[in-house]
Length: 282
Image 1 (cartoon, rainbow, N blue to C red):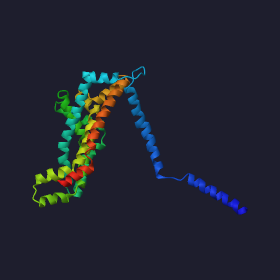
Image 2 (image 1 turned 90 degrees about the horizontal axis):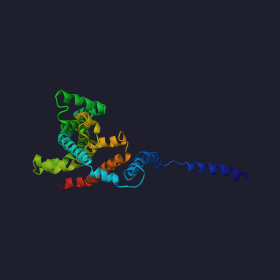
Image 3 (image 1 turned 45 degrees about the vertical axis):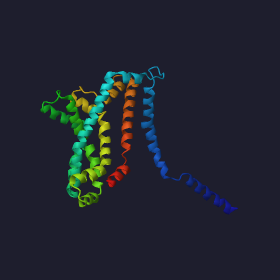
Image 4 (image 1 turned 180 degrees about the vertical axis):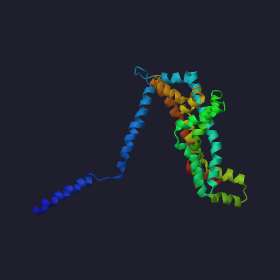
């Protein structure tokens, strides 16, 4: 009997230990809570306000207001135009820079890359104000509002295009280029048939990191155009803030979210596996 009594406490202790056993799945709990509180819940609020009126009744009137308002459509078009123009310029400037950096020796490569990353360590607003003063010295401020906005966007977001391109180019198998040269292809043919297709994942990543933020970065558009160029991000801030109409602000935010979702869906078709396969088949 004594042996049986002494065995019971040890067994219960083991059960308690097993009940509190840690597993890796529990690490997802903080992330799940954060996702629910700061992503899903705000998104549900936006959807609710977008499809309701001020009295709480269901309506499509907010969407009718947005798509029937010439000023809203104009600002949406300006936002897309600024995003596309900035992305194209950043790509044209960033690709040669990333390509040259990837060809440098490893010791010099890190120093040169640091020179492009260092401006990102400075406060975003300070960089914008510094460039604004430079434009003012050249007499451009207040005269070329759209051009000044593009300059400001390119200045702030160019590193976001260079970094993914550089990362893709540095990981590319250089033996493929050497093989193409040995087979008689010229340097231009090697670039268009081997280097460029294999760097498409970096191009897509850079486009994503530049196009989407520049559509909503109203701080730069307001700073460089003296608030003469209004993009969709400013409209969201206006209706949620001074406009005191969360229903209109939610509609604009939801339309922007749909545009971003469609652009991401299109970019998702250019997956790394597909692009890598396409590049090796050329």
